[in-house]
Image (tube, rainbow, N blue to C red):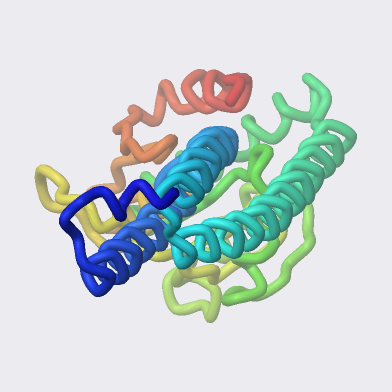
Length: 257
């Protein structure tokens, strides 16, 4: 016996109730798909589907039954695709980190890199030559270099960095990206940060913060106006005296993500 028949509701009202709940159901499942983590989505959607199927059987709401079954099947397909995508993304990240470890610098190579950067920064700072130098850590920056920039693939030396940032050369604008102890590319342009900053900052400083917000790289900034040196890391810009540059850079290079 249809329980709704015992209530003072017309058949038309029953149809409107069925349709209304169906629309709410579609909206709710869509909300769950975009709002929660995958495990939470599965739990909420499964229990909701079971509850609605029971109610649809009790109150004889065929539209609810159909929408629930179809919606749950579509959600299952969506969840499967999402899980596969997450597994591939995790695998890619793991492979990247493995390759980084395999190409990691030894202690002596790191010391040599920092020493060369120290000499380069001292020279750039003393002549107030603007510079933007990014040291790649575990996040791969190759995709960024493909969007803009010129491939260099040469060992890091103070002379090379001085030549790149010498005002008037074709490569002095933009950033230079270093992978390991190799200058991978120069004249690379970043999206500047959009967050408000206290004080007056130029395009180099905003670009340095911008790249540090989307990856774990360390970016060195030399101000063209003052010659002062800063390090952009994890979305923050930290002023560093030239005399303390080596120590601070090593600290960030050793830091785990």
